[in-house]
Image (cartoon, rainbow, N blue to C red; front, side):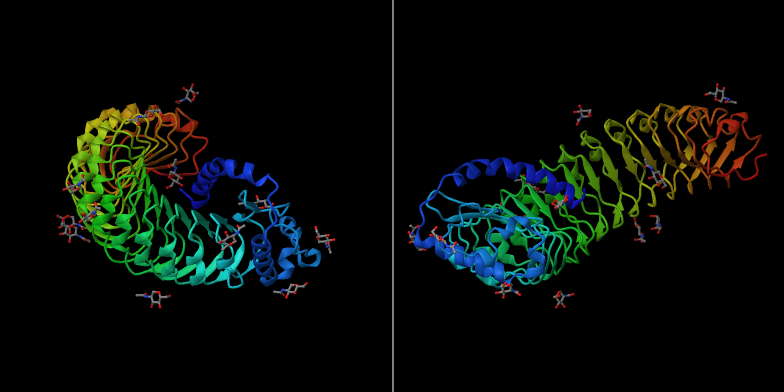
Length: 459
Ligand SMILES: *[C@@H]1O[C@H](CO)[C@@H](O)[C@H](O)[C@H]1NC(C)=O
Ligand SMILES: *[C@@H]1O[C@H](CO)[C@@H](O)[C@H](O)[C@H]1NC(C)=O
Ligand SMILES: *[C@@H]1O[C@H](CO)[C@@H](O)[C@H](O)[C@H]1NC(C)=O
Ligand SMILES: *[C@@H]1O[C@H](CO)[C@@H](O)[C@H](O)[C@H]1NC(C)=O
Ligand SMILES: *[C@@H]1O[C@H](CO)[C@@H](O)[C@H](O)[C@H]1NC(C)=O
Ligand SMILES: *[C@@H]1O[C@H](CO)[C@@H](O)[C@H](O)[C@H]1NC(C)=O
Ligand SMILES: *[C@@H]1O[C@H](CO)[C@@H](O)[C@H](O)[C@H]1NC(C)=O
Ligand SMILES: *[C@@H]1O[C@H](CO)[C@@H](O)[C@H](O)[C@H]1NC(C)=O
Ligand SMILES: *[C@@H]1O[C@H](CO)[C@@H](O)[C@H](O)[C@H]1NC(C)=O
Ligand SMILES: *[C@@H]1O[C@H](CO)[C@@H](O)[C@H](O)[C@H]1NC(C)=O
Ligand SMILES: *[C@@H]1O[C@H](CO)[C@@H](O)[C@H](O)[C@H]1NC(C)=O
Ligand SMILES: *[C@@H]1O[C@H](CO)[C@@H](O)[C@H](O)[C@H]1NC(C)=O
């Protein structure tokens, strides 16, 4: 799932939550000396921004310095600014507003009631000042999709009311400060798409209310702390595209509310914990491109909400557990490029929602089960580079949606399915390097969509 898609889901939720605050901001607040102090703080920051960028932003021109009138209250008509009944600024909502500059001119101490800052999708750069710690009422901080750099200041740990922290898609580097473990009200922590390195602080395991932990696309190394198993409210845990190593802690099997678990493209080793069989709500389990070894635990067959199971490019061995046939909602099953042996269980034929089945480049042998003919939604089927033998089941010719079929480099014998192009969708078909004999089926005349075909010795 892309960060943008996730952001959309959350911005809907946030808009709902903030509706009540917006109603308050319609009240005409009393003008106090505090509010003129707050106005000055906002205008000082505005003046520190690059002026050519401000002209793009109609929302910010109402406070442009040329029309500056300090006696004016920022709570009236300053777009993107909301106040409480006492006339103090509680919210800055200036996402996607073409702002360009830094936070160094932002007087955090002058805006003590700020609860909400959204500066998402601007061109803000340099570091987050440590004075951010003055925002003791801050609940929501979104600085994502900017060009912030430097370290995440450890002082962020003082924002004890924080529920939502999104710093993703910036250039933050260095380590995730362990002080983040003090943010015990945090529900959402997005740090994806930065240059963060070093290991995940085990203190993250204290954030009991966390539902979203997105750390993907960084350079985070070390092992996954077992304390993550404490975060039983987690719904999305994305650690993919990092340099994580070592074993996956079996405690992660305690994360029984997970929908998405992405740990692909790391350097993880060891077995897939059988405790993953407890992740009953899991919709997508993505572990590809690591060095996992040992068998696929049969407990994976318990994950009956699963739609995507991607274990490709590991070193998994043993046979494919027949229990995978219980994953009735599976649309994607990618087990290719492992070291799986044994024959393909006939139970695979129960996975009638499958769209993509990749079993290539393993050590699979034996006959292909005729139950494959039941996989009527299949679009992609790759079985190449195994030691499969016997005939290719004729029923495969009845898979009307099949577009991509590779069965090459096996020991298949006999004829190709006679009605192979019955569904007219086949685009790519490779069957070479087998022991097939006989003729190319007549139905090939119907293969009008085909762009590539390799049939070896067939005539
Ligand atoms: C003004 O701010 C001070 C300290 O920041 C606070 O003690 C005081 O209550 C505020 N006054 C009003 C009217 O909000
Ligand atoms: C922006 O323009 C105002 C006056 O027009 C000036 O006071 C301020 O220094 C300028 N800011 C920058 C960053 O150039
Ligand atoms: C500033 O605001 C005050 C009070 O609202 C008003 O009397 C004054 O004319 C304004 N000044 C300018 C330059 O707009
Ligand atoms: C940002 O604002 C522009 C112009 O108002 C709009 O077209 C665009 O869809 C917005 N982008 C996002 C991601 O909100
Ligand atoms: C981590 O990032 C920091 C800041 O960019 C850098 O100084 C440090 O060398 C990096 N550490 C490693 C092990 O790459
Ligand atoms: C969190 O996890 C660690 C390691 O698994 C454990 O020692 C600790 O007791 C847990 N803490 C809480 C508060 O559950
Ligand atoms: C968490 O998982 C570990 C290892 O799988 C287990 O021993 C422990 O009892 C679990 N803790 C909870 C609170 O379920
Ligand atoms: C399987 O998918 C159907 C249709 O989308 C859905 O109604 C059902 O709840 C899913 N089953 C599980 C166990 O998630
Ligand atoms: C794969 O796992 C086997 C043991 O199951 C081990 O002997 C072999 O070295 C591993 N290969 C790689 C490339 O990690
Ligand atoms: C596959 O497994 C065998 C037996 O466990 C092992 O000798 C071999 O190294 C493995 N192959 C790879 C590519 O890891
Ligand atoms: C099928 O496989 C091809 C080639 O690997 C890929 O481009 C395509 O996206 C796949 N389609 C589905 C539905 O998985
Ligand atoms: C070609 O397709 C048409 C329409 O699906 C079908 O009636 C016909 O039997 C097919 N021909 C062969 C040789 O399979």
